[in-house]
Image (cartoon, helix red, strand yellow):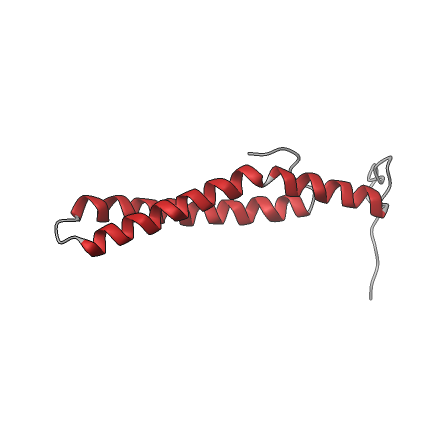
Length: 97
């Protein structure tokens, strides 16, 4: 049995749900991700450079420590990126964070 429950006060936005309105929201959300994308790319590059240095040196303990931190940070940033992406996709976030 399928039924839809209408919640009081849940009205569509004044713009409605037109293709143009949805496209505008998606375009803004996409643009808002630019800073996050750049941060992720840079963190990945740092991780790659540090790993290369660790492999190339026998005394690379400090670089290994830093690369471990960077990889952990990168994983955290990627999880946050995914969460932000889906939040924006569903219209739950309006600004960059």
